[in-house]
Image 1: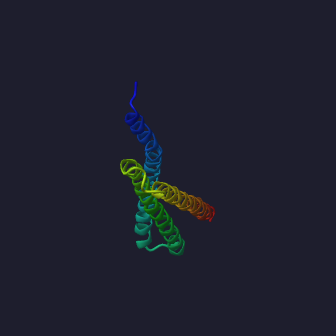
Image 2 (image 1 turned 135 degrees about the horizontal axis):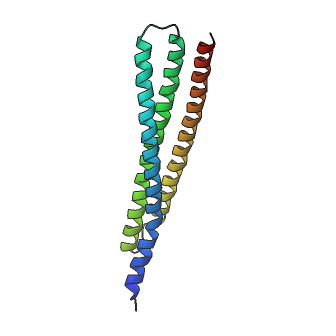
Image 3 (image 1 turned 60 degrees about the vertical axis):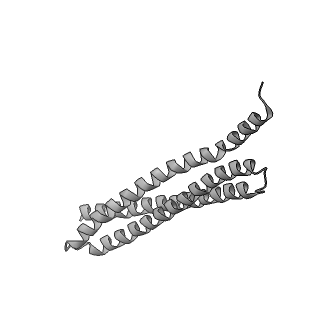
Length: 152
C-alpha cells in the first residue's frame, strides 16, 4: 500500500512531465532551426563568393544576398525564442517541484511560466513559417532567373 507522501511525490513528478514533453518538442524545433540556419549561412557564403566575381547578374545576386540575410535573421529570431521557451519550460518544471516542496505557496508562477513558454513557442513557429515562405519565394526568383538565362 502506498503512503500519502509517496502519492504526493507521484503527483508532483507527473505534473512535471508536461513541461518535459514541451522541452523535448522545443529541442526538436531547435535542432531543425539550427540546421536551417546553417544551410542559410552556407548559401550566403556561396553567394558572397559569386558576388565577388565580376558578372552581369550582380544586381540579382545582391537581391539574393538580401533575401538570405532576412532568412538568417528570421531563423536567428526563432532560435532565440525557442531558447527562451526552453528556459521557461525548465523554469515551469522546477517551479512545480519547488511549489510542492514549499506547500503550494508560489501561486500561479508555474502556470505563468508555462504560458510564457508556449507563447514563445508560438512566436518561434511564426518566425520559422515566415522564413519558409521567404525561402520558397527566393527559390522561385532564383529559378526564374536561371531559366531566363538558359533561354537567352
